Length: 233
Ligand SMILES: Nc1ncnc2c1ncn2[C@@H]1O[C@H](COP(=O)(O)OP(=O)(O)OP(=O)(O)O)[C@@H](O)[C@H]1O
Ligand SMILES: [Mg+2]
Image (cartoon, rainbow, N blue to C red; front, side, top):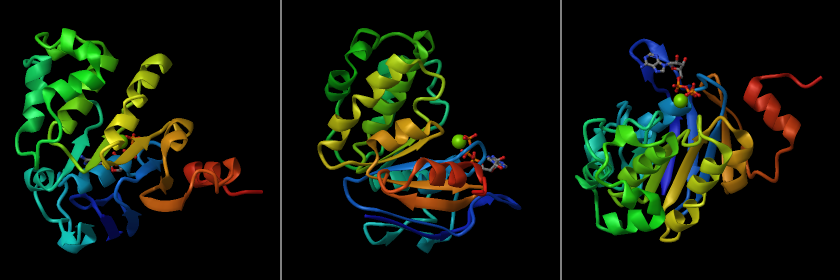
């Protein structure tokens, strides 16, 4: 469904990704792991159309989408849960969710379905998003992305800064999200969290893919080396 080929992305003169290539099949869950500054968010921003790239460096359903702006990427079925949630503070929970529906490509997800996935949000629907806990805000950010009914959901560090029980609640939603064939790319610094739910993983180190495979195939030492750049003795 998704192919990234030799992606070299960055910010002006600064190059953050070097020849990154990656493939994702329909319904698959990928983990992207890597330390601070490895390029994980840059990769997701490129996929979401927030960084423009050569058209053919990213293909989705056979179409070259690398140069499309974000709104056209959403319309094709790719939605981003951005790092740091980025909710609209002056809007209520429900208004934040409704914004996600704008420009989506079909109507598989509704407010009712989001509230079914995260029941606590229904009780808080009229509250300003700023009145919510970090975990609840993260649920709104995920719900907002789902409201565009994506076929590929991109999640940037959805567990960062949250308590373990809250992380568990959020990850418990994943099977329902995947149930209708939605593919997911999870960016996490927490290796164990990401690998426990992923079909495959890619590790980024200083903007390059340093390791990829299935979670069961790689041992801890290999992953540590790919993650931190340590050379095995
Ligand atoms: N807006 C920007 N302008 C210039 N450089 C940037 C910008 N955003 C990120 N960078 C740089 O690009 C590189 C990759 O950053 P990126 O945010 O993709 O890393 P990351 O893997 O998501 O890190 P983290 O785990 O800290 O979120 C870093 O060197 C970073 O300093
Ligand atoms: Mg990041």
